[in-house]
Every structure is written in C-alpha cells, then in structure tokens.
Image (cartoon, rainbow, N blue to C red; front, side, top):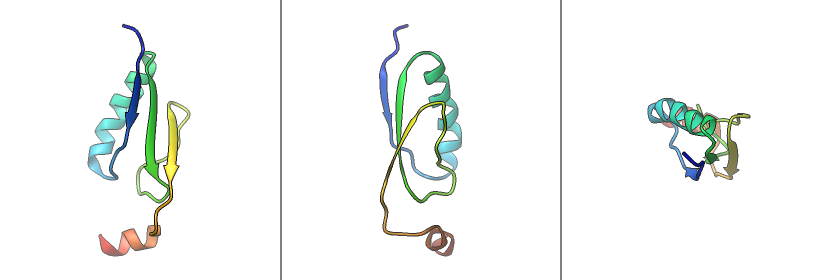
Length: 68
C-alpha cells in the first residue's frame, strides 16, 4: 500500500511498549510517522526509526518518580 502520514501522541507507560512496535512497523512499510512526546519521560525517547518532536513540561523526572 502507499505510505501515509501518522501523528502519534503517546502517554508514558505500558501502552507505549505495545504501540512502539506498531509505529516501527508502519515506518518500515513506508509511512511517515511523527511522535510527539514530553521532554521528561520514563520510557519515551528519541529514535532514528521515526521522527520525534518534544514539548516542554513543568515537571522533572524526580517529580514523576515521587508522585508514582
């Protein structure tokens, strides 16, 4: 099929672990994928497989650790 464009805004946590594999497969099949993530995160991060854009947040990683 023809590659399309996909915008993904994942939440940190277990759902991303499954969704990441889907995003990677879509990229392999020619889709242009942009993932938008907060600059502070436990599991979300940059990768050469797809485009990642970050946005500023008002909390730190230490704050995340403390509230969870």
